[in-house]
Image (cartoon, rainbow, N blue to C red; front, side):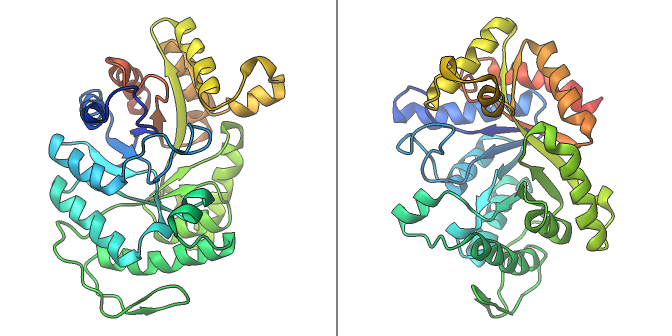
Length: 327
């Protein structure tokens, strides 16, 4: 199964006791499964991200959480958007995602990226390095992880990692999908063209035509048919049957990340909300179709940063957008 409509949970700040936190995550994922989403995502971070909240807000470890969700669901795919390569040795990551695949009955997707949140690395003791270092590490990691997921036993000696006939048992299949996430037209897109089944493109919607042209070029350079690499776009959605309530959520979202919307210039507001799609169901669907899908992207991954934990929000989004991606 591909990724045409994904639901990402970008936060665990639900204003409830910790004992209610994971039941709320389970409910969202089950609602997504019932509402037509094909994949559920959590972030792979240890602190909340700037742009979503303060670092000390709740953040679950991704693969432990996904293992819990695997036993609470039956058909929805499970993944990270995306795993930070710098946090785990590649052989450990191959083992973790293969175990998730076994536990879920073949529903895991490996989402992976180079890693970028320096505060986590510094405070928790993960080596951060330079931008170039992180992409060299990702390049090497994929040369280990991909064969391990396919049932091979790679021997590898690189600058960052080494393996010796690395085994990975058990596996439920040899074609566990690999998804890269990012917007880098040279490094990320080249690695996606070489190794990925899916690319989640992180950018402003207005940049999508250029990004897709660059991706086509990287595929050509890799000798790959561009149509064999699926794409999606991550959108921040504020949706309500009452469009005014949805647009009020944009203000709530901005204030929640420490931005005073009343002081923003038009240009600053456009930059802060470029990936936000807000309004009633018809508004949101039309906006996503025009600004994202019509640009040539195959699928959507959405989050509901203000309302996702509220009853009915995921169901409304799924009911609205499943028609859009199946049309």
